[in-house]
Image (cartoon, rainbow, N blue to C red; front, side, top):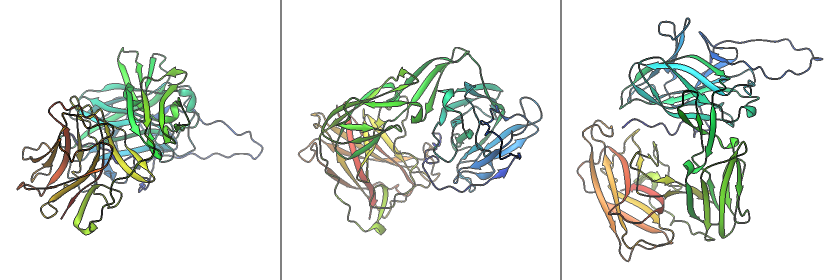
Length: 466
C-alpha cells in the first residue's frame, strides 16, 4: 500500500527553508496610482518567474526539489522532484509550496493551471494544485491521485471561479510519498496558468455528492467535508478537483438548529433537524449534510491511567502518537466516511456509512509488547442493530515495518451483541493482546461484519496501555 500523506496540511508551525529564485524591485512615486496585481501567467518556463520562492513542508525532504537542465519537455530546464524512500532520514516524503512573495497575482483571466510532467516510473502523486500560501489557503485547489507515466503528458487543473483569484500567492503546491516504499523522480515543465476556453460543465459537490444524515448534539462543531468540483476538459475527460470552502456559499435550512459559516464550519445550537447545502457560482452543489440534533450530549468517561503507561492513538487526555490517518478510505471496497466533530474542545471520531475503517500509525510503528492492552470508548447513536457484529484487527507490520510487506500479522478481537452493547451512551471496551507479534503494530481496523446493519459509530480514547 502506498504511503499516504495526511499531516502536512494540518500543522500551523513549520520550518521555512527559503531559496531565493529571483527578485524584482520597483520605484514607486508617492503620487502614483496604486497598480493592480500583475497577471503573470508563467510559473516555471526554463526558470522561475519573478517573486517565486520555494518553501518545503517542515517534515518533508528539503532537498527533494532542484532545477534540471538535462531532462526537460521544452527549452533549457525543468523542475525536478526526487521523492525519497520510505526510511529516508532526511524526510519521509517530498512536499512544498511555490509562493509569489511579491504580494500575489491576478489570475482572474485564466481558467486552469497547466503543466507537462513525466516520471522515472508509473506513479501517482498524492496531491498537487495551487492556492496554498501558508496563510489562509483561502482558494486552495488540489488534484488528488495525479497519475504519471514515463512519457511527457500535459495536465490541466481547472480554476473553480477565476474571478475570485485577484490576489493569489500560491502558484503551485504538491505532496508525494514513496510508491510501495520506494522513492522515484518526476519532472514538471512549462508550468503556467492559461485561458483554455475548453473547460465546461461544472458540477460542484459537498460530502462527495452524497446526502449524508448524521446524529448530532448541542455544542458539536463539525465541518462540511469532501468539497469537490468536476469539469469536462477539452479532451472529453471529466476532471474532479478538491477545493476550498471559500468557493462555496453554504446555507442551513433551520439556522436555529445549526448555523454554518462561510468556511463550512457548523455549530449545533439546539435539538431538531436541519439540512446543510451549498451553491458554487450559482450552481446547486450535489450532496447535503442533514444534522439530526438530539440535544445535550454526555462525553466519554475521562481516562485516568498514568500517561507513562499509555500509548495513545486518539485522545484529548494523552499525547497522541504520530498517526498517518484516521480513515484510510481504502477503495474500492471501503464505504466508510468521516464526520468527526468536537464538543467543548473534546474531539470525537464519527464514522458514517460504516462498513470498515483503518487507523494507521506507521511512522513509527508502535511496540505494544509491554503496553499489551487495547482500550477504546464507543457510542452507537440510535439503536443497536439486532445483527450487531463488530471486529477489531490489530495489525503488526513485521520487522520491515511496512504494511503489506509480506511479513504482516494480525490479532482479531470480537464484540458480539449482548447486554453490554447499548445505544446512546458510551461503552468502554478493553482487550488483552495475546499475539506473539506486537513489536511493530501499525494499524487498527474496525469492521462491521456478517452484514450487520450498523452504520454510524463514535469512537474516543483509543490507546494501548500497560
